Each structure stands twice: as C-alpha cells, then as structure tokens.
Length: 539
Image (cartoon, rainbow, N blue to C red; front, side, top):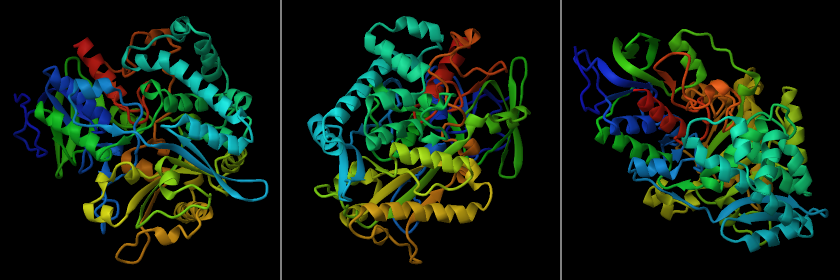
C-alpha cells in the first residue's frame, strides 16, 4: 500500500500515494493555512482543487487579457488575518495602510457638491471634514464615540478567535469596563440601528457607518435576526482596530506565500481534481475524485472540507437546506482605467477620493429605500455601492508600463443586490446594474467616468461584473454569499460547543476548514488555523 511522500507536483496517476494523514478538499486560503500548520507538525497532506489555480476566492487574475494587470478578483482588502498566522508559518507577505479611510460625496441644501474625507493618519482633518458636513462637532463626537465602543468590544473578542469557543455568558463575565459593557449591549444584544441613531445625527455619516453591517448580506439596521450586528462586528474588530489594509502584490501574494510554504513542507496539491464523494470509515475515510477523465480514491485519517455548505452536503450525501439569512447580497465589479477622473467636490483630488472606500448613494435613508425596493424584487435605483482603488496604495499589480502610463484598477462592491433579484432575467438585470453603477460614478465626477475606462482590443470598456449567481458558479459561494453562509457570533450559545473549535461536524474526523465554520467569513485564515488545531488536538 502506498504512503504519502513529500511531493508538491500537481500531476496525479495510479502510482501516486493512496494513504494520507490529511486530505483537504478545496484550496482557498483557509485550506492553505490548515495545510501549512499540519505539515509543519509532520503530517502528510494532500489538497484536491477543482480549478486550474490555487486560492479559491482569494485569487488574483488577469481579468482583462489585453492588459498586464492582475486584479484581486473576488476579495481585495485584509483586516482579519492574524499576525500570528503570518509569523507561525513564516509567510513572506505584508499589507500596507491606506492614507484615506473613506470618501463620501454629498451635496449642500443649495445643491453644491462637497465631500466627506475620513483619514487613517489625521484625526484633525477628519474632524474638520465632519464639521463641514454636520455644521458642528456633533458628527465627530458621535463618530469618535462609536470608534471607542468598537475598540472596547474588539479588545475582548479579537484575541479569542484563535481559541476554542466560549459561551456567551463567559464573554459577559469578561467585560470589565463601562465601555465594554456598553459595547456589548449595543453590538450584541440590541439591533445596531439603535446605537447608530443614538450617536450619529447626520444621515450621510450614519449610512456610511452602516455599510460595514451590510456588505455581502441582505439586512437592515433593525433586523431582529441581528445579522447586521454580526456583519458589522467582523468588519470592525480585525487586529483590534478594525483597519482594512491593502495586500502588497494583491491577494495572489498571500496565496503565493502560503503555497510556497506548503510546498516547501511537503504538501501535495493537485489541480483540476474535483472531489466527488467522501465515505466515512472507522479509522480512515475514502475521498473519491476525478483527474484527467479518470477516477481515483485516496484514504485519509482526517478530511478537511474547504468549500461551501452545498458542496459539503453533496460530498457527504446530505440534502442542502439553506437558511433565509444565508442569501448573499453583493455585486462585485472590477474595472481598469487609463487614468483616474476628477471629482466634483472642490479641494478633493482623485487620489484622495479613490484611495479609501468611496461611498456612493449610501446614506441611511437611501439604504432604507434600497433594502425595501430589493425586498420587493426590484433593482434599487439609485444602487448603493462602494469603490476602492488598489493601485493608489500598491502599484505592483500593474506592469511597469501600465503604472508609468497612469493606469489604475477599481473594485466596486454593490449593496442590496440579493441573489433573488437575478433568478429571472439574469443577463438583462446584470447589464442594468452595471449601467447604474457607471451612472453613479459619472454623477460624482466633473468629467465622464466612462471616458476614463480602458478599452480592450474590441473597443469595449474594461468592466467585469459578477452577480451573486456568478459568484456561486465561479467560486462555490452558495447563494452568492461571500461568507458562505450566515455569519456566526464570536461565541456560542450552545453549551455542547463550548471548548470546541467551531470546525467540527457530525462526522468523526471530518472538519469544515473554510468560511462556513464558526467565526468564518472574510479573508482571515482563522477557520484554517482552528481546523488544524482541532485535528492536532484530536490526533
């Protein structure tokens, strides 16, 4: 009987090893993190990947073939990746701070164009910009207070994400300061809308802050499920500060760093090898997969599944039954520009406007209307979205020639675009939504935004739009949910789960090693780390 060898080749044939310590289905960043830790501990690891590339949704690709630009296609910023993982695995990977946190265009009562700039490196400039928006310091004081409460909950929650699950009551007992207790009530016990409405008097600022609660999920400020609270928390606790940073070299740099470490430690990765089924055994499990029109079966003591719930169910022979809150609600649009356009707001440069998150049509009232409209099965007009330019902070994803010529990439995330909107008339609605976003960008620019788009060899603008259905098909995001399924709390209400890692399943030796695990979602590596820790603890 064959045993696993230290090989990283993507080829596979009947002479290859059939027995492994661990087989991982899927090669997203969580799978690579888990594989790195397991190989580092001396375990033999095989990764099976259905695509012809590694990294899953954290891939970078040459989206527009006529241009040498490698865009982070589906995920683009990093906040939740713990430094501990980078250090433990000796990853050659880093991130960079954006000078500007966000820019939000707004108009005065007389119709004059203005812009709210919030800075990562200058609280005083942020305060001045908020004073212009609100007319006094009320906006700044409310914003500053919310940041304080976010920091208070992050201080308690962030360190626990790489630890076994704690019960809700255990968390409450750890709250020491008045701010921690206030933050718990505001972000865990009550709908998020209450604290936003209590602290923030301005509609534009209130909506800007709400976006962290809506990116990727279909929800509203007073949603009784508190889905908005969980989404908000995962956007504001990363690293203890909630700052979102730019991956140097794009997401592919992180994938490359993980892949290099895995291969150096003997992890074997096989591309274009979709898994078909998993048969549970008493000592070993059997994983069947296809490779080059042939079927193979390998045995493993442990199996990690780095895929969505639908794929998990299919592999295990279960029925897939999503919950209503599993529905994804996001549009992803990638663009390449031959130059950045000027914006209408006086005193705001294109570099300032596009460096951070540019918020469009995301006031509190506008998003209340967009949610209601989408709930009725109609595309919201205007369509709220936010835009970000990677290349202003890190130009390495462009060729030197494109960089010298002033080219830039833009990534847009559209809100209140649930999966249900595209079940019918998918292609027509996709075109409609693309034009809505381009119209919104035109509206805040002092020149034609469309004229700044690069053109391919056929004269078509370099714009790629992904609907929830596209995300489901391309990268296994069930119902287009970028978090795989309903986001969990950073604790558990189930006493039987206390002390577990949040990756265990009903099958002994089978684990979730992706965003569908507890405390999953976003680019974090946390489920991969926790899966590896769980496996090694139970070995």
